[in-house]
Image 1: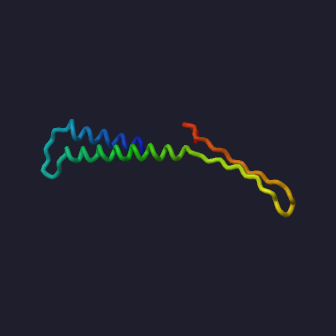
Image 2: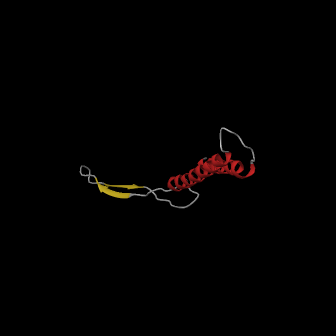
Amino acid sequence: MSIGTGVVLFVIGAILAFAVNVEVEWADLDMIGYILMGAGAVVFIIGLILMAKRRRTDVVTRTETDPVAGEQVSRRSTRTDEPGTL
């Protein structure tokens, strides 16, 4: 979602900065466009970083001996760094 929001902000900013030729007294539309383009780039980069972190999974395998019963207990989890896996 944040990647799409970043793209939308960037596009709206580019339209305001380069395509709209309207002068208003209370605002500089070119500056607002540049600010929106910068914010869109930042949001896009943050979205990419968060997506990369979300796809990382750690795996831990442990074998312990139960002191009371003398049994070995194994715990296993998997690690996946493949793109496209959740």
